[in-house]
Length: 265
Image (cartoon, rainbow, N blue to C red; front, side, top):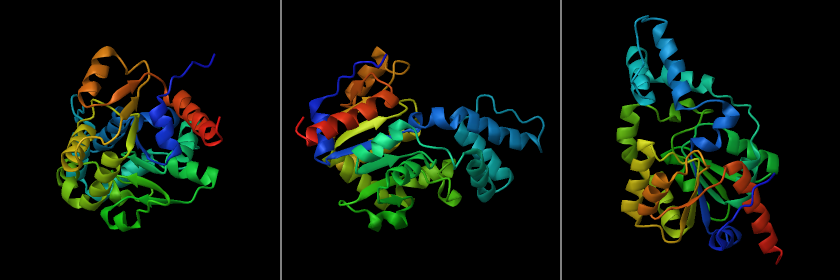
């Protein structure tokens, strides 16, 4: 049975007015790709163990294992390992299809191509911004996908090592400036946003410092597994309201409500 979904009117209005931005984290793609940070870490660790049998990734983060692999081999070999681990032919979910129809501006830290496949399926013209040199292509009159941490079809853009993250504010200054403008002037919806992800927290904190607090409301779609009272209160301190639904249910319903509003329903 389809759950009843309560969607704040201000969010529907922002979508209708093209004044909303989606910030998508790994959670929106995990079920399709069958991968998360832990499984990617294990794949890279297994590659290291081919040459160093006693290598133990227990207690190491994905970033630390990536650093180890890059030190033993090189950065190019590392990002190509990541690229081969992530399916590039996977079909988008209904949440991706709804998202590209709802939002003119999508920001993601995901490397996968599911949003690109969704744009293609829906025949929506769009811009993909992956590195700083792409920033001038941003167009307020078009659909824009900003992939802050790179893209699997352009492996050398993938952000994965400590050096990548530490230098990110300098190497991606123009993209970050554009995202700061979007987040500080639009209603924001976070989907698949991992509160425990240090890099996302650091990224958003830096954007808030540069662009100020959210100009409008900010919401986070978090399924029952992630929307406990403690997480809700922590997000509340960041002025982000929790919506306790799964993306697969919420985003298609948001699209239906927005279309109904446009038609005067």
